[in-house]
Structure formats: structure tokens, C-alpha cells
Image (cartoon, rainbow, N blue to C red; front, side, top):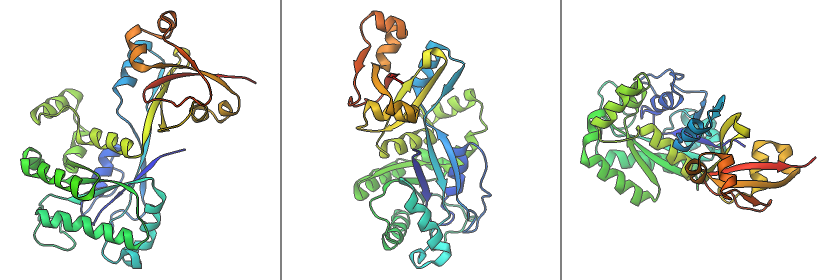
Length: 310
């Protein structure tokens, strides 16, 4: 099962720029007109995971595979979308298919990129009005209850402004959901930075992670996902996405459908214990590996070895 997040917003809010940054390649032909993205683009994006990195450093497998979330770039909605205006029916149908929504809200000023409804840009009223326009169109289109992250897409210089982060908190409380400030244009440019230059720039901003890394992890969170790991005897370290509250048998089915049918038991250890003890064999010698049955509820960051019969 693949988990997907749709990127929505008014035209020229920065959706395609954000998607390009998430996809780490410029798939979308960005331009300053409303319907740059007509056929939604999709990208399977790795979830940043320090534990996967540490497991790979410990085990040194030939292959290391992160968990992923699928992001879909959906074209800009306009007033009247629920009546089919601006190809609205097509795009509302796409939004219905996704598991959650990233709502990109324009919080930057650029005279070269017109706003579809306003001459005055970057004000708190404009930002909240843009949120309400999309929310109304989704509601009128019969789309309610989708978990949402509001992304305030601001200019690079505003990332150092206290006001934009005050507004972020206001939006979190007013709309009772996640919100995040970032500059999609900057995040797209950071794709081409080498690791040292990127680290230095983030240090200048007094942050440890890019806006994209924070966004991906927030998306993972609102999807109610946890991560478990398999290590395949040292041949491959892999992170898997799983819904909270899933059983060991369901986790086995994620690895391979036959494993769910032939499940016998699972050997379990937390990733922190495994890293601390220095590997699977040492963890076994220390008595830290547990045997669990099919109904065991997988915990976030469990390392799982599945035992099956024939």
C-alpha cells in the first residue's frame, strides 16, 4: 500500500516549485500562469531517517532502502473549481484520491508572479483569505476531513522574520492543523548545494534541517505512519512505513504478501537497543531480542525479523 499526499493551492502559490524540490529534480515546467501543471506529477520521496543511516553504518549492507511517501503535484485551484471552472472537476477528483493534503499558501512578494485575486501580497489577511478560498472549494466539492499541512511559502529574507513564525502559530491554532514556514524557491536551489555548503547555510539560518526535511516528516506524521526496519541478515537494511496500531502479521504482509499468510512469529528489538548493543548477534546474547506473535502491535522504530512456515 502506497501513502500519498497531494500538493494544492491557488495558482502561482509555489506548488510546482515545492514539488520540484521534493522530487529533487525539475519535473514541472514552472511558469507564471495558472495551469503550469495540468497532468499531476508524482514523486516517491525518501523519508529522512537518522536511524536508517546509523543502522547502515553499523551493519554495512550492500543495499539500504528508506521509507517513502508519494507526493502529487496537483494544478492550482481557483474560485468556482467545484463547478468545474479551471478544470476544477479533474483536479478535485485527484485530491479525493490522496491520503492527505499539503496546502501551499503564498506568503512571498514578487511583482513578476501575479496573484490571481489580489494586488496586495504578503499580508496576513491575504494569506488567510487564500486558505479560506481553497478550503471552501474543497468543502463545496465534497472534500472534507482530509488531514492538512499549511505551508507558508515565503521569501528567503522572511525566513529570519519573527512575524512569519507568529503567523504560522496563529494558523496552527485557528485551523487546528499543522503549519510550516519555508521558501520553496530556496529549497529548490538547495538541491544543487553540496553537503558542506548546505550545512553552512542552515547554520546561518540557525536550523538543523531544511524546510523540506521538516515537511516530509510532518507529512509522515499526519498520515499516522510509523517506521519499522528489517535487516535481512546484513544483506539489506530497509525502512518500512506502517499505519500506527498495525500488528506483526500486517508488518509481515508489507515485506511480502506470502509472509502474512505463513507468519509464525517475529523477533523484535528496538532500533536504539540494537544500535547500543552493537548488532543482532550481540543483542541476542544480551537477551534483548523478544519473540512476539501475530497480534503484537508494532512500535515505531522496531527492528523486525519475521519467521514464516511453508
